[in-house]
Image 1 (cartoon, helix red, strand yellow):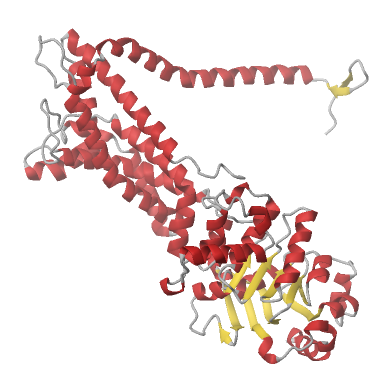
Image 2 (cartoon, rainbow over the protein chains, first blue to last red):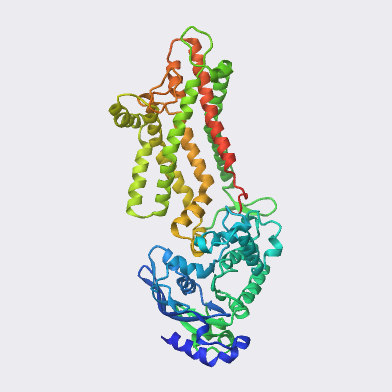
Length: 281
Length: 296
């Protein structure tokens, strides 16, 4: 509830501070959670979360390990419920429709809300091209592109993921031959190929070296031009570098949500300030 | 935590009992070498002995001719070789889909009551003496029809394959990282599609290996065939008729009192082993990972 208020207050007062993306209208809200609770068995790991994700923005979720930030992220595309004993309650509105009760199947939700994980997960039995095309192959027959159409989409997705130049001559090679950083960008390309409206990134650079991390960060910053991005990170500098808005989470609670510049320079909650200044976490 | 120590030349302090540790270590290493040798020696002896005894009777006639009556020179086991191949085909056609399907079920339903019961029963079936499987097949597939048949033999062998294939399939699927399954689900794959085209596909080399182990295991089975396929001195490829099989032929020739039949039995055993090896090696080759091993 407190988080919800802050969210509202921030949304209003900080609008001018979001720079070039200042023209936030209500219609730009792509994803919104209302009173979202997430459970593992009887344990409530996300408490009454209220978060808004806007188009053409990167929203970062930061917080100490185990605070529930990954779980919150996984609730957004209904991946949370794939774990045995896990469930979510409350609303997640995607373009105004509740993904939990709005008649959307989990499969449909995930086609519109892509996800990339902490460790790169290329499909080991597929070539680079087939990895990127993996999400296209399972589309309903009417939406499925032709072979040449697929090639085009694969190239486009790889270009958007800043990987095309590195792999264009070996699209038929196995994806596991790529370096860790390349594999992660391949996974981003795979998620982008189906044209999702939202991209969820769960600590996408946690297993990468600094150079690869930088490339992925640059990529994330560019991607927001046409997809709403939510990134979970335990790295505060990363959140400061890539995000427009930042949500701080602690013990399952969204403590504070607002423009990244405000969160990092003038947090309103004492706990946020303590975390940002490195007093715990 | 403090160990008694001694100063060795050079001034390094080492535990006093280091010599004893080194000796124990060396002894244990030697013992493991011996155990490894003891584990592989039987195979080498068997192969060497088979080659020595069997190669003499191996002639192209052996593969193309039918058995000859006692006293006549030559003759072969063409019918038994064809029969064994046919029995393996029937058993694989029935046993592999069921076994792999059951393994997939066990892996997907892991932790549920049904899966635990199925796994337990499968293990019991795996431990069942093969002669009992033969009796079961006879009761169900031979007695009602009043004659022995290749089909009954193949089904008996399939029953033996299923638990082996199911358990190896389950183990191989469990080795596929959860992250791969999650990646497919997050792309919008349905659960069954994730299982079939991502998980099962990734586990395929291991599943094929398990299937081959099962084929190799049943190729040499004799007991389940005694009163199902029964054996046949004549050429037959009809699934409804009794059929010859290498293990049966080897058995009946080996217990005969004739020297040239003994020689034929050795040759038969050699062919049986070679058959198993060829199946294993060729299928391994066929399922080599197209993109290398990748990062494990």
